[in-house]
Length: 259
Image 1 (spheres, one colour):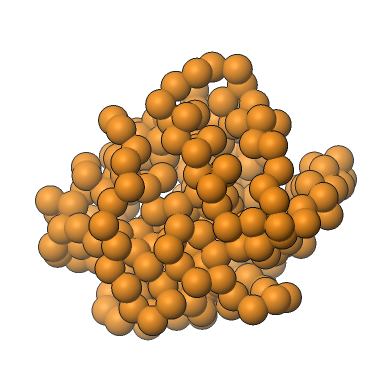
Image 2 (cartoon, one colour):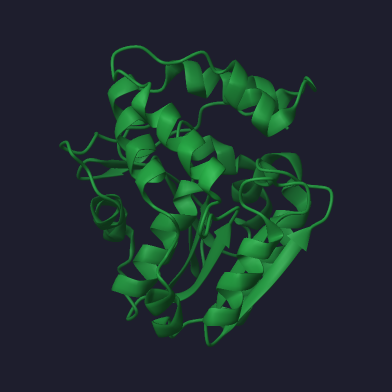
């Protein structure tokens, strides 16, 4: 598919893509991206769900948060979309936000999906992500090449090109704000996971080196209604590169939670 810019709706400072009718499914992208990263799922699922895909604060057309921002503030900004029963899904840092929303808003979050979520990074991975965060000046965006190579290796594709465009054009201050939060977080606490009272699906790629299948399985084991899934041939950007598989998992899980 093509990853073209879509019209936005707004509530306060939050901009979001909206499509479809039915039970609500909120989709939260990762650092440096924008709502269009969920374009395949928006199109595949909007005949059965009302899809809301927000631009994370400081990304796309959403206003940035005041500094220094915290994960709870990203969660609070998106919580305005939770005015009725909802399944929340997030990718990468968006998974952190989704899990935070599920913990803080149990009345409305009926299920949560964490895609490519981190949990207890290795020491080397933690140092690497902190080093990248420290290198950001909030004025200019870094060369996206290293990020694209982590996500796509050297393989050219429309998905890679779309991500390059978004990484080059994201607001540098908004990107730094989100990446700093991402670097400081090490996944949800065990207590948070154990206290989740809604079904939770932890889905990642078999070729994912940073948000590994072992991480997803460990989180799922702590959640009373948790489960883990692995797309064997996928890596970090699986909502785009393995769109059909991700859409099928979301469809089945959301139907179960919102029936």
